[in-house]
Length: 85
Image 1 (tube, rainbow, N blue to C red):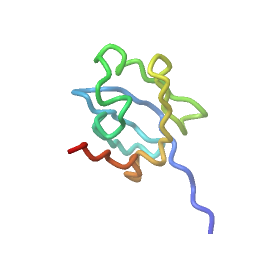
Image 2 (spheres, one colour):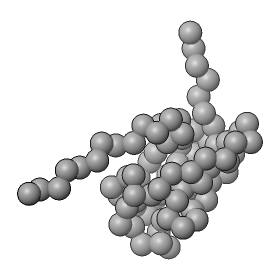
Image 3 (cartoon, rainbow, N blue to C red):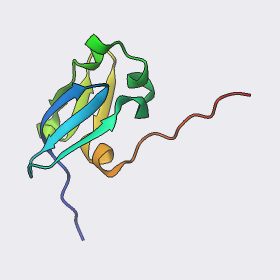
């Protein structure tokens, strides 16, 4: 059975959270801290997010970060790195 991919119509950053308005009008968000490259990014660079691939991906050009919208909506975040003892 084929599942339909999640598509975003709009994206923005608010209080270090990445917000998505999906094609079906749902709004979802996740903390930027879920992604290592976004976690420590300066606010001005964090806000420079754009939609790519017809709303299927998020791109931060200056941070060289790409995130699949479907992964973010499903909570498929990169594994948290354990701190060295």
